[in-house]
Image 1 (cartoon, helix red, strand yellow):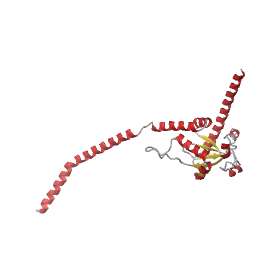
Image 2 (cartoon, one colour):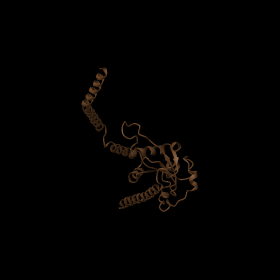
Image 3 (tube, rainbow, N blue to C red):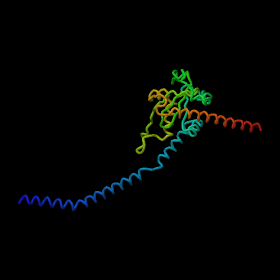
Image 4 (spheres, one colour):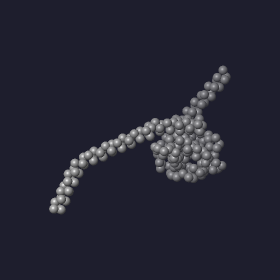
Length: 239
């Protein structure tokens, strides 16, 4: 008798589960759909597709207000900044301009110079003229403007710790500005704290050499236009 009642109870539970399972599945699907809809609504409210673009625009405006006209024009036209190292920068940043204009035809075939071993961040030493290229979210590249010889890459990172959403990376122009400020304020400390690698670790050396050639052409064109502007002003004063 007990066996028969137990068997009947099992059969009844099986029948009830078969009858209620479709409803349970349907309820679960509806609940999951409501959760997804609610999550999408929250994401749409919290995410603005134009936020990154506006952040970069603000960063560019800040960079422009901090650097000089030549540096801003360089970044705007070429996408990177050149910063003179040590004593060259403190002397005005134009000591090696003429040398950088002679890069065409030399950068690709240049061999490492013994002066590269004497590079120092001591502003008073001045044993060799050297410079840096600053790219957005790339290592800082040190090189010799006289020959185009690449010296090293310095890896530094400036994460955006103030943003409660999105990427932890700074906007491109903010990253360039942070590196520029660090180099111009305390070059020795930045170089000491950075991870140093040989050229080519993260940036293709051929790309850097092409950028140096672009920089040389850019400086020639700038000097040409500035010369024309000066001669035009002189002619107007003479008239």
